[in-house]
Image 1: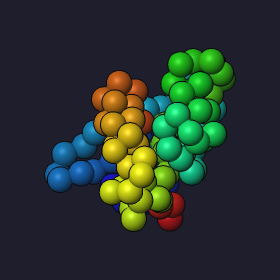
Image 2: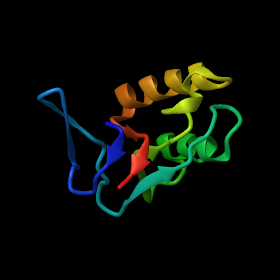
Image 3: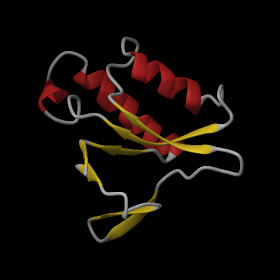
Length: 102
Protein backbone atom coordinates (compact mmCIF):
# COMPACT_ATOMS: atom_id res chain seq x y z
CA UNK A 1 0.00 0.00 0.00
CA UNK A 2 2.41 2.67 -1.14
CA UNK A 3 -0.12 4.99 -2.74
CA UNK A 4 -3.72 5.78 -1.87
CA UNK A 5 -5.87 5.73 -4.98
CA UNK A 6 -9.24 7.22 -4.26
CA UNK A 7 -10.95 4.39 -6.15
CA UNK A 8 -9.44 1.84 -3.73
CA UNK A 9 -11.37 2.35 -0.55
CA UNK A 10 -13.34 1.34 1.55
CA UNK A 11 -11.27 -1.81 0.93
CA UNK A 12 -7.61 -2.02 -0.04
CA UNK A 13 -6.29 -5.03 -1.94
CA UNK A 14 -3.10 -6.41 -0.45
CA UNK A 15 -1.62 -9.78 -1.44
CA UNK A 16 -4.94 -11.09 -2.81
CA UNK A 17 -6.81 -10.33 0.40
CA UNK A 18 -8.96 -7.36 1.26
CA UNK A 19 -8.71 -5.42 4.48
CA UNK A 20 -11.30 -2.96 5.68
CA UNK A 21 -10.28 0.64 6.06
CA UNK A 22 -11.95 2.86 8.63
CA UNK A 23 -15.06 4.62 7.32
CA UNK A 24 -16.91 7.60 8.81
CA UNK A 25 -20.19 7.20 10.61
CA UNK A 26 -23.25 9.44 10.36
CA UNK A 27 -22.34 13.08 10.93
CA UNK A 28 -18.60 12.45 10.53
CA UNK A 29 -16.20 13.76 7.91
CA UNK A 30 -13.71 11.32 6.41
CA UNK A 31 -10.21 12.58 7.18
CA UNK A 32 -7.03 11.93 5.18
CA UNK A 33 -4.07 13.15 7.23
CA UNK A 34 -1.11 14.09 5.03
CA UNK A 35 2.21 14.49 6.83
CA UNK A 36 1.69 12.77 10.17
CA UNK A 37 5.23 13.22 11.47
CA UNK A 38 6.97 11.58 14.37
CA UNK A 39 5.01 10.30 17.36
CA UNK A 40 5.26 12.57 20.41
CA UNK A 41 6.85 15.30 18.24
CA UNK A 42 4.77 15.99 15.12
CA UNK A 43 1.68 18.20 15.10
CA UNK A 44 0.07 15.90 12.52
CA UNK A 45 0.60 12.96 14.86
CA UNK A 46 -0.97 14.95 17.70
CA UNK A 47 -4.07 15.66 15.59
CA UNK A 48 -4.23 11.97 14.64
CA UNK A 49 -4.24 11.01 18.32
CA UNK A 50 -7.01 13.54 18.98
CA UNK A 51 -9.20 12.06 16.24
CA UNK A 52 -8.43 8.48 17.29
CA UNK A 53 -9.41 9.41 20.85
CA UNK A 54 -12.72 10.84 19.59
CA UNK A 55 -11.84 14.33 20.81
CA UNK A 56 -13.33 15.64 17.57
CA UNK A 57 -16.46 13.48 17.15
CA UNK A 58 -17.35 14.98 13.76
CA UNK A 59 -14.08 13.70 12.24
CA UNK A 60 -13.12 10.10 11.46
CA UNK A 61 -9.46 9.46 10.70
CA UNK A 62 -9.50 6.94 7.85
CA UNK A 63 -6.17 7.38 6.05
CA UNK A 64 -2.67 8.62 6.88
CA UNK A 65 -0.19 9.60 4.16
CA UNK A 66 3.37 9.78 5.49
CA UNK A 67 6.06 9.91 2.79
CA UNK A 68 9.07 10.29 5.09
CA UNK A 69 8.55 7.55 7.69
CA UNK A 70 7.12 5.14 5.12
CA UNK A 71 10.05 5.87 2.83
CA UNK A 72 13.62 7.08 3.30
CA UNK A 73 13.09 8.04 6.96
CA UNK A 74 11.88 4.61 8.09
CA UNK A 75 15.32 3.59 9.33
CA UNK A 76 16.28 7.00 10.71
CA UNK A 77 15.47 8.84 13.94
CA UNK A 78 11.79 8.41 14.79
CA UNK A 79 11.31 5.58 12.28
CA UNK A 80 10.87 2.87 14.89
CA UNK A 81 8.39 4.98 16.86
CA UNK A 82 6.37 5.66 13.71
CA UNK A 83 6.36 1.96 12.79
CA UNK A 84 4.99 1.12 16.23
CA UNK A 85 2.31 3.84 15.95
CA UNK A 86 1.37 2.57 12.47
CA UNK A 87 1.06 -1.04 13.60
CA UNK A 88 -1.08 -0.17 16.63
CA UNK A 89 -3.28 2.27 14.70
CA UNK A 90 -3.91 -0.20 11.87
CA UNK A 91 -4.84 -2.93 14.35
CA UNK A 92 -6.93 -0.84 16.74
CA UNK A 93 -8.60 1.64 14.36
CA UNK A 94 -8.32 0.14 10.84
CA UNK A 95 -6.63 3.32 9.55
CA UNK A 96 -4.93 2.88 6.17
CA UNK A 97 -1.32 4.07 5.82
CA UNK A 98 0.22 5.21 2.52
CA UNK A 99 3.51 6.57 1.25
CA UNK A 100 1.96 8.95 -1.31
CA UNK A 101 -1.23 10.29 -2.91
CA UNK A 102 -2.27 9.69 -6.50
